[in-house]
Length: 286
Image 1 (tube, rainbow, N blue to C red):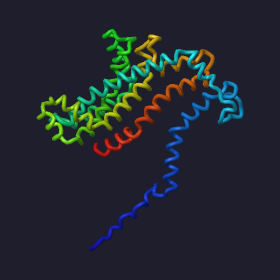
Image 2: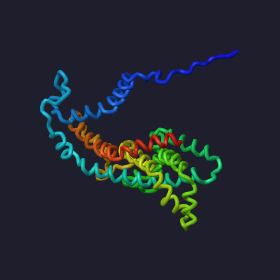
Image 3: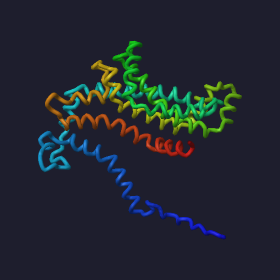
Image 4: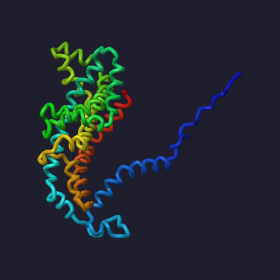
């Protein structure tokens, strides 16, 4: 008995219609950009216009006064510099440690390699609030509270799972013959890692670095709990200080938020091709 199985025709899926694909893409764009656009428009409005009814989408008379106040009411430039320093140090540390870990998993004959990868994934699933007390006690025991190190070290640890997983897929795709040739020419295994493997895996390194930087830049809970030094506050903590006991100056807070968003937006725009390429190649190779 012969049974003919009819294969579905190409392009008959849910999003086969150009209109549906365009609508889906528009929905994603609106969901991603509308909050930032609303914050930008709010930062250009006066307090009176913001609370007036009916609600206006565009400011009648755009003003930069909120940005001036954002920098004068609080030391926003100091907070910005602290965030850049902490995020940059955490990113460098995360890449150094995760590159070694990823290389060991990808190249060395480690027993239970799949179990190790599973443990790495599982370690990233713990809510940060459950780790706050042990991290705080560890930093206090080491005498590191109210220092940049108290933030950099936990950020490195928290970034390790995602950075390691991204780099493992890239390292596995690099032919071992290249490393062997480098070691025959006199390189150590560590030298082959930094001189051969890491440069060839540049898209993955950029992707992991961007993810680590953004995670450190946005983090609030540890920055609030581990650092009470006013001169070392980062942007997420500093922005909360604009709120008064009986007031909530949304235009000024929105201006400060735009200042916090701009560096990340510029970073993503500059390295967009590398990040997108790294995510897609990592997904295909993994």
